[in-house]
Length: 513
Image: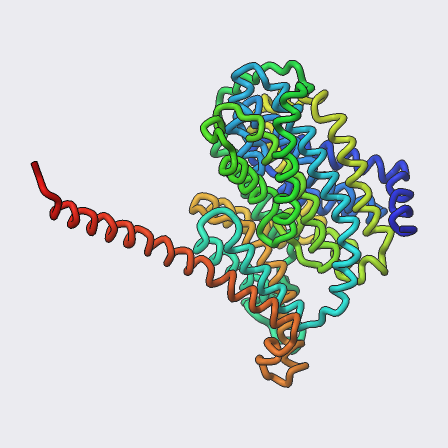
């Protein structure tokens, strides 16, 4: 409790509050701008965070960008039918329908309240559960971390949205990229092709800025539209009692769904919003209202994505495992600042741990106070042409890549990954699994090799260990589930067709008039 209260003392510092405010404002702005997203923005900001004197302030700013983007994406989804952030795609269905009915203010108000409730409850749960998770994870050794990293790669590839085969291919490429450089155990060079720069390995920041920053710039320039959309008018922002009563159950369910799915690698805000929306539509007595302006269709996904954005900090801060691409950027920021996320973080850096957690309480209050008054300003920002925004973003990205190691090679490597990321988007490949597999690849390889030394080269040692054996059992279940599900779906039509055939044959025996 003393450390928890000391965290509020850290957040109360004027400099820390300023960085928290800057982070949430940037996050809201990025959420409003369609396409860029928090992961790309955090990748671009990584070199700037390195220059910040206080590591706590830098990490708090990055965290503010992440959960601030969840708020901002709602504004354009409701007013312009343009999801500014991927997690706000579902909000478009009912949010814009409400705006066309003249209830844009009600939709934004419900979204803001649901987002605040979901995030706040999730922060309280994070504060209560994270210390227990960290104390339990202290028992983790190389076998447990190897099994957990392997499960993380699989979950990222199979649970997330999109084509699973393409996600697995992207994850495999990420694992391969993680092996480039000098072997930390033997000193042998791998896949360097005689390049001195590649012998040092590929910097994660360069990969992230290329796959997210440069690729998003190229993709957005191609997809830009000439005519701006006319935003809907906003009035009666505070919802009525009837609307609040109707939305309350959806807010509660969205909070629970978002919190638990946010903890899973590959889950995150996007999957949580989809699951919450699908749940509300399934249990509703009037499912036909969804897509035509249902209050629950806005409340559930907006609550879930903000709850997930907060709970995804649990595996990062307590286990050192990033749950999604944005958490991978925060993971990189911590490493660059000389801080290793692990179960020992709570004891070794309590100021950082509780400073980041408690900054979310303050950040979400700031977002609630700013989300509605700044709507008009953010709508004007949308009218800035991409031809103006893209060169500015590209310049910041190039300068950031160069300042990492003062190397032009890193700049060209970033551009290369930018082109790769652009081609991946064109081919339907998501860059998220590749980036997360790249992060988890080093953790997986090092811990597997250390475990094999512990077990004298016997791989069955992983199964004999209770924790790693349990994690590997979960791995097998997750890997086998898509096949089992496909087999069940294949048997259902066969059973149905056989039933129809038998009923037809029975009808032939009936007497006719």
